[in-house]
Each structure stands twice: as structure tokens, then as C-alpha cells.
Length: 435
Image (cartoon, rainbow, N blue to C red):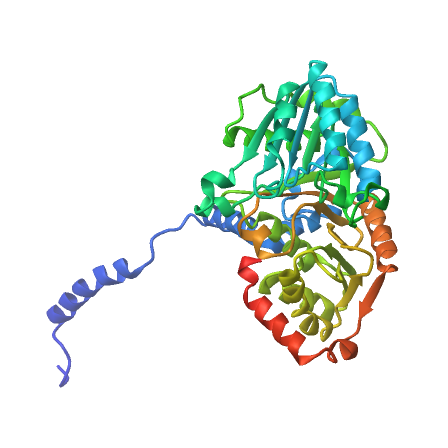
């Protein structure tokens, strides 16, 4: 036996001790096909690029392509001169129900036109329901509401300020503007029921705004949102909207894919996520018109990066807002956007109150959503999202028409503004979470 070698019995003993360890160290068998399926499901659920890979064409611009329905007809309405006559005509033809939801309901010339139209339909036996926001309609006199109720109109005040003045819930407002008539036609956008949006002939401020008239399946979505808010606000229950009523409006050749995107309760950031997805998907143009433009840092970063990769990014904002703090906070962002090639246009005529966007002439939104913290964190908001080149082309054309009435802000010119104004802008921007 050689020196240092082990006896045969000892070798067997060592081998017997090590064999179980070697067996235990082997990984347990894995069902690899099942694991692959699980990994695929997780990627499809949480990876935006995977979602875009599954959806081709215009629908890839939408964050929720599965929500879009076909057979919708959308008509863009510019200012109160187009929107109010169309809305009043629809009300006058109502035979079943009229549902109106608005942030501001004013006792002025336009407000009284709507009051007469609503009362006339209620006396004719049509079910008429009106939901208005307490804060937005703070100056509405009680006589206006009593007149509606005397005619048979059901009226609900959304979260009355007198009850919620010192409550956190008092700052969560209903900023939507919705009109649904007979389940066949719906309206939404940025216009409140107020003379501020009418022409100068109405002794109005003649604000620039955009509304949309909808026919087709999206009308049922507008009605469902109205009904949910109505019931949550204490309104009397009524039968749910019958979806079949809108089908006769879907046979036209000029129909588009569209969906209603709403934010409320636990879905505060859903519209913001749709904006961000479209901006990240942009390849040619991003055209945004927004009355209160104080977006969060994530959206600002996305806009700047889009401009750097060659996308034309153009922002249309008021030259003087009705809320000065918001105006100054918005202007604080101009320098950082202009430096990256973003185009900024300021509306020179009255106040620009629209909330619209169009990306690559394909993805479009019209609604009540402002790119600010109040819309993001507090208000109930709503937009109609459309995908497709037909409606997108109309949106592009309207932006071009509005752009011609604007002053383009140039970086060199902008940097010559007084230091005092820069300080005011900086202070206003520090208050952006309250604006």
C-alpha cells in the first residue's frame, strides 16, 4: 500500500456519504413550457412595447386599444357659436331623456337658453336630469335651480360647498362637461354652460374652446359615466341605458374608432397615462392645445425627448389666462421646452380654453382634461380618444388654423423678459401642486 492512500473500506464510506449530497444538489424538475407561458403573460401585461407589438396601425397609439369601439361618428365643434346651437337643437328633439353634466352652470344669456330648452322638454314628459358642480357654479342663484325643478327637471348639486367647505373631499370637483340625449347623441369637451364661450353678440368674453358631438357606441359610455356620478351624488335611481339605441348611428362611412377615457376615484392618472403613451409613440408630430399647461416632470421629459428625436412638438397656450398663477407657472416651463426645440404658441385673441391633442395625425383627444395638478389629482375628468387618420386630419387642420392666430414664442426673445417676472414665474411654479 502506498503512503498517503486510503484503505478501500474508507473510500467506500466516503463515496457513500457524498452520493446523497450530489443527488440533493440537483435542481428540481421545472415545467418549462408553463414557465414560458407565465413569463409571456407578465411581459404582455407590464411591457408597453409588447402591447404595441401586438397592436398594429393607429391602435398602437392608444394605451387601451381594447376599449375602442368602431362605428362612431365624431364632429368637432369650435367655440360656443357651433357647440351651443347643436346642443340646444339636440335637446329640442329629445323624446326619451336629456342628461346634462357641467362644471359651470351660469345664470346668464346662454344659461337661460338652456334653462328654457330643458324646462320645455321636461313639461313635454321627457326625463331631464341636470348635474352641476357646486364650486364651479358657486354664483348660480337658487331661483335658477327652483325654476328647473318646478318644470319637472331633476337637479343634483355635486358635493355642495356649504357641507364640504373644510373637508378634503370638498376639493374633489366634477369638471366634466357631458350632454346625452336619448342615448343616440352625446356632447363633451371644454365648454361649460356659460356666455363666456359665446360670440361677442352675447356680451361674452368669446373664449376659444373645442367641443365634440358623438354618435355611436361611445354615447353609451358617456351615459354610463353620467349615471354613475348621478347615483354617487344622491340622485334618484333610474333604469340603465339600453345599449341598442345608438346602433342606427353606426352605419355611416365616416365612422371612427373611439373610446371614452375618464378619471375619478382610484383612476386619477388614467388620462395622463394615455397622453404619455401617445407621446412616447410619436414619430412625426405632437400638437397640444391646453388652457392650463403645467404638466408634471414626466410629461415634460417625454415632450423634450420627443423633440430631440426629431418629432415636431408644438404647444398652444393662452397669452393671458383667467387664472394668473397658472399662467405664470406655465411660463416658467417655456425656457426648458424651447431649448429642446419645442414650439410654443400663445393665443392672442381673448382666452384659449381648449383641451385637445393630436399625435402623428392619428391619435386625438378632446375633453375637459387640463395638463395640471388639479385635473391630475383632484377633478373628475373625461376625454374622447379617437384613433385613425380621418378625424386626426381634422384636428391637424384646426391646430394649423389656430396657430396662425397665435404669437410664436422665441427663445432669445423670451430670455429678455424682466427679472421680476421670472421671479413671479418661479414662485408660481413652486405652487403647481395647488394649481
